[in-house]
Image 1 (cartoon, helix red, strand yellow):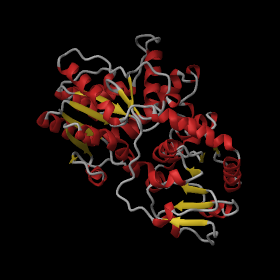
Image 2: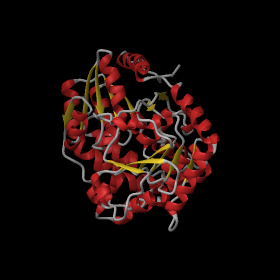
Image 3: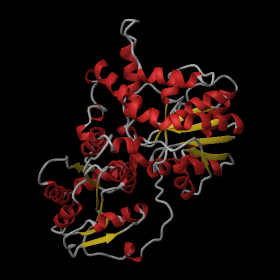
Image 4: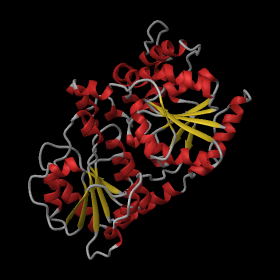
Length: 433
């Protein structure tokens, strides 16, 4: 069958789709990855075939010009993301209405509108039978419906979007018929109607959701979930000799990520302070800082710190006793599969909620953002993780939970069956075994 992945241009989002795209290709299916022109290079670097459509979105430049949006997208200050895993009674009608109103204006529309027209045209020409779309790129759902394809979405974090949507629809049905504003439905209805597609909730969250987080990290939902084990993909790389060299001290990786800072200029933890603080820990610290981060270091680098531009995490983490990072889903999931305890400085979106769950499972510690003493608190948390065996034990338990999830190759037959049912007009939810 012909399978089309739809994404928007973020390296981490594309990397999250690579393992399933490769598995479908290895099973004999034709696989393409469509997105904005800026996404082409990310896709090509992953060894996949890219389709450039529409024009590049302007979401990040829009946020840069409006600093309050960048600050709101930092999870600790966001009026939306701080409640993503809260009890239902905290997800009120007013709160969710504000959430969808804002996200439709500066995220969904900006990402999808520049892509939609060309994407529908391509789908009607190429004729995919299955469309897998990244959770924000709902243009993939509209295009799939416009050409008669089955479709589902892939999440790259805790499924806040799916849970918020499900809760909003539940509350909407309890309200008077003349007082049910729904910014997301109104926008999708308007765009889908251009192509003869009527609105349904499948256009918001797909016919199913491919979720790469273990069950203990999933949010409660009635929507069909297709679990799939995360398979690390770090891009092309060369293994440094020192990775396998024996060390008389535990190895720790420090990585702060770069994407969000590069996009909107939001401040991250001070790299120099962190390096100096971790210099006091009896460990070999591997700091994966890009050229710009290294150029910003003004002081000396402690003797126990090794600065590297890039190293494949799937090769480095199995040699580590702990990982200190910003909570990015790729780093988080790779460390989880390696069974390594984590010290997380949550930055954006779902990272505080995901870090809290990790901490509750005994597989690491959270260091919350604060005005003072961040570097010292990270140092102390790392010292605790390294000195108390319970954290390694908790990380090992989490690793086994992650490893019991179906591999991408095992997910492929489910997708084939769902697509066949859809084409036969008898499509039902994909039910994992």
